[in-house]
Image (cartoon, rainbow, N blue to C red):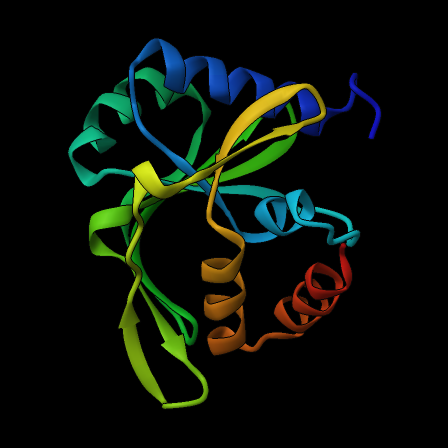
Length: 160
């Protein structure tokens, strides 16, 4: 990945903002999978923050917000989140306290349990990130069972 890419610039900017505001966060989704060996192209940057920090973050990021923060529900997700656009890069920030996802195996909604202190600290492209633990990521991707999730799982499990 080119360090001058929109993705890298957005990730560096976002981690600097979160650090400056002293907001805990955890990287999830495709970027977390990439940290564990997935190779598919990334569309966005997904992360969770504690619900108590949403308004502080909203105030800081207001000029970049394209959606929310507000409630959203579709066939896979039931959550409060905000979508940002930083210099062309999409970023989705979820409220860790109020997120559920649909388990395609049990056909039930599962409350997402984010343990910020249990994050794995991984260096990605020179940026230190708190990342969802690999087994937790695999478990939730197995439950979601979308095409991208199956690709990520296969590639993460093949990573040595």
